[in-house]
Image (tube, rainbow, N blue to C red; front, side, top):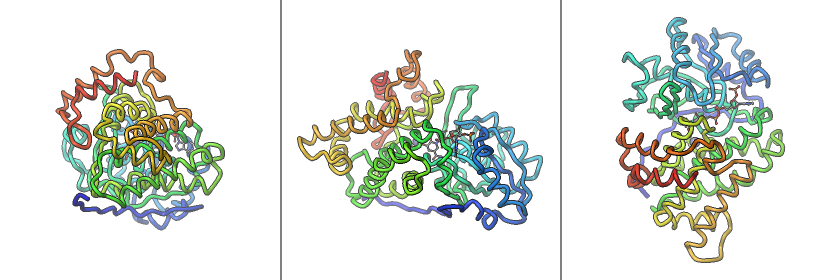
Length: 386
Ligand code: NZQ
Ligand code: ZN
């Protein structure tokens, strides 16, 4: 196992009817900016629950943060933070609203002229404006990590940021919020969380026995609850296991002491930036091709995954490893998620070259668990997804 240091300060408040506990978490003397998305919270009752919990606190609202949070819109929110002398942020939404809030937490205290520099220059946020979250969509794990991904439509870029100052102070996870989530977003959430585990597991063995079993148990739980959640989002047992699995998939725990790949996400973000494809769907597109292309380097873990997660016990190591890739792809298909770029756009010609060039321009000469995947490799992988 590799050395590690681990600190995750986010308080999780999990369970039925927990949104009312907001009143105990938000400081009474704060001036709060409540941030939300396109309006789903006004239809499913979450907005009322939040407002009722905050009657004794001064709250300003900013709605309209879109999926793949857009820089230009976040700048409008930043203006509100400054004009209204906001002291505390509250994200009520999925990964996009929470990520947008993390950007604002950083930008509010940033002293440079152009907050986009935080992303371009990879500035680590040591201290941000304090914030909490009410999670409405299990998927990204953003509710218990310190990362964010921000989109800029003008330049068709999607870049990551983070730092120890960007952990939410608290996150409220009420699995009942799942009842109003559309099928498409449920499938996305399951796929995103599943891929988060794979990114931290499907590398090479380093003797992280417990981390492997943590990872495998999250994958098994997601596989078990996926059909139940999709069939009946009001099934509380399935919903609560789904929600907690998504959080644990990306709160840092399973990443400790083991290598991480994350190349699937890096290529996937480019597909969202270029075509607007939902984040999770880009991962389903890249994953099978990435594993086939890097088969030799990943076959030991692929075979272990085959045996322990998919119960494939017959055959050679390579046979099992290959069957596991097929099982993974079938799992995405079962959720109604296409695994080819051509399932989403007919305009894919030249995409692979474009992505390779972007990686080269950014100096991303070697990505993946061994920093050995070159822009040329990425180009070949993306071509395999057409
Ligand atoms: O905007 P509203 O109207 O609220 O509707 C949203 C949105 O259209 C809807 N929704 C959310 N909760 C709902 C609901 N509809 C009905 N009932 C509810 N309870 O769902 C749609 C998608 O929401 P979004 O927040 O975009 O989804 P998700 O949570 O999948 O977040 C995706 C974003 O997170 C980033 C992605 O790149 C993408 O930008 N990620 C963040 C990560 C992180 N911070 O750690 C890691 C991930 O790998 C990912 O990159
Ligand atoms: Zn993801």
